[in-house]
Amino acid sequence: MKKISVIIITMFLCVFLIGCEEEKITEEMYNAYLNENVKALNLEEVDDFSNLGFLDSDMKKSDLILIGEGHGTKANYSIKMKFLKYMSKNFDLKYLLLEGSYVNSIKINRYLDTGDEKLLDDIYFSNKEDYEFYKELYKFNSTLDKKDRIITLGIDAATTDETLNYLQEELSKIKLDSKSKEHLNKIIEINKISTEVANNNSVNKEDYNNIKQSILKLYEEMDGYKDYYKKNLSKENNRDLFLVLNSIYNTQNAVNFDDENKNLDEILSNITNIRDNIMYNNFKTISKYFNEGKYFWTIWRTTLLYCFRDKLIR
Image (cartoon, rainbow, N blue to C red; front, side):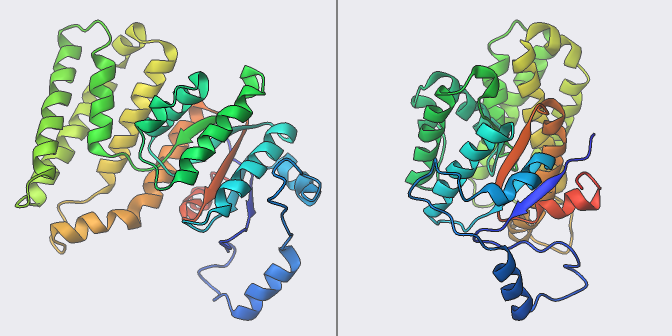
């Protein structure tokens, strides 16, 4: 995979990467950095880019643009829309990375194509501003040629029920042979067991591990039969099917239910700590299929450190 140039713009969250493990960031260093790098943004005029020219040279040479954010801050959405429009109009921005699942981004992209708000109603948003942001993105996309429109890419960990429901729905739409029917039946069975486990207060690590192993085996079986799905699905639907599968594989594979030193609650609560690695692995795969423009992400996590570790970005 090609290396990706990155620019990090600190807004609410400052991200320090160089020497972050060797040197403690002092208050003096923090203030000095802000004094040299802070620029005021006019959020009243989202379409006014006159004070963003200082970023032009970095934007031109960067493939991945990251902006720090503060969760639950209303200004996040104005900042995100301002930079999205600025980069789309001037620097070939194509992809908006989401702190959400790939299944969610499929639904959002369908909404952006059709304007059908029922698709948005099927997605959980943490606040009203998040919902309204995509309505604004739809309006902006409508002003662009189809080839220039923004595509959302969900790189977050996959939830089991959402993923299995999607797989079940997609396989139910196509002609199935005996092998693919087995896959569909396994998806339905795993989904049933997963729902029962989620509603049972007396489950244990073995219950969750059984679901994990079933999902990993399903992935291997469907991946080994991908030529059939390639023939019977459209190019886009086949791509999405296997990116969804890859996401649930990365998510389940990252969780260790065999850890004898942790109980179930400790293992499940630790998912937050391994989430960055899941997102990074998802991005690596997804970016192989979506690589015709720049990526933009409002970020508060440490996923970027994995990119530097594997020399994915420069």
